[in-house]
Length: 603
Image 1: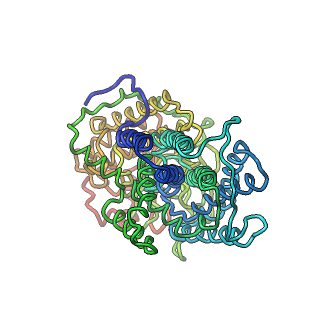
Image 2: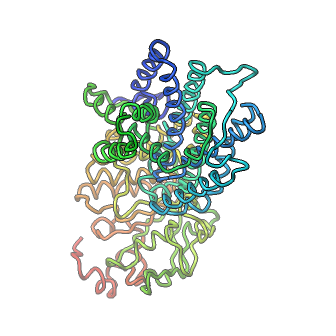
Image 3: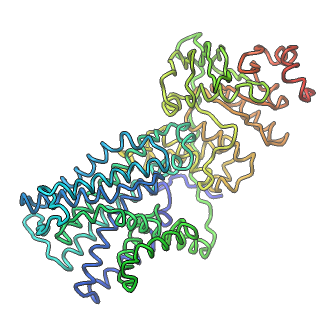
């Protein structure tokens, strides 16, 4: 392993994310072709390809990065086109007015729509956005006085910028593709860092995203608005390119074309959006002999890519290049250790965690029944009990994943009752999961760095646009420090899916530590570890407590827990059976009867 004391540049390699050699080479070929060989018709097709590239770049935010199947992108595109057509042709406003208004119209409609529909899951969200698209189509067809009905709006003026009319042909082609470059750079800047990785975490596992302090609802809302921004801009350019706007732009075949472009090129890559647009705009020309069966061709291409190449053509090319490229040395940042947690609570004598009369039922079964306890600053408290006794449910209640039916939870005197899980994580309550919840396609340092970025408030739109390169680099160094603290720094660049089980457990704890927690909730951290790994983990957990972290450990492994815990609480059927020092709890007759009597207690 090699370390870098001063990491430079962006969070992840430019060569492997979005703006890559394939994009640069393709751009050069496109310029040479347009200037030297293309006729008027080919230039028009290339111009439309640029328009659709912008549309698909926007669609990548919601469909690719947010992982939500929106069928409203065509409608948002049509709204932008109609706004330009109405304002330009009917009210004779110039591009300086029509362009921002077209974007604003699409974004306003998207914002209004997002409030109810983004709460829906998977196919319900797709159906809702399809319904919205159909409403927009019906308005375009039937509001004849404004939209021209089925005939649409014609005679849309050319683009005029600072008194200069952009000429059709090469002039318009160059203008549109300069816009493609601008929008592409914005997309790359947003998604080629911690913000992009935050979307990846939220897309893969909503629970993990909330546990590290990410507001997944805000991420999806922002993605939907960004997709609308790009769609509105693309719609405006489309209106100026073909000079006619009709309801066709809002129909389902148009939306299918947009989706196919994203899938074929690669829905997570800037180059993928551009390549998909270029290929799919030219596809009808190549398959003109199919006539009215072109939608079948789109469907077959879409099915083929989804099954055989889900990462798109650009993803396939990147994998091929990665296989051919000689192995590169692991370049890792020099670790920076996070400061020790303050051992004191909000006020002297006040517990870090106070649970009072907590209850929750599922279908009439009391999972947690009138549970009360406190944990003081710097304590390690073990939570034991038979399977189904309510241990993990209690962890979920404390961390905000479940809401109690009755009772209260206070952290340093602050009530957590009405707070969402991501807010609780931001307050300094970090957790691990009973079943490992790492993002397997990301490497270890990326998993931890996203959490660290969330803590530093780098995982938001403003930070992504501003860059904040120094803080991003610092977050990565601090993530490396968390991994080193758990003894897995050497494996920081390894994908989590390729790590041994015990190592992955440590990476998950490192991710929790990246939040600088005052309270750490560990759900069966020793599960699956061999005795040597258990002993090593026990010492590391002790060192965390010595540095000021208060810890609640759910564990079945008494060999691991008894020497570790300062106190123990035993649950049975959702209620506290016994509480006190480990020796007293483990020798309690009811605990032995309900729990320990069923296990080997020699440890």
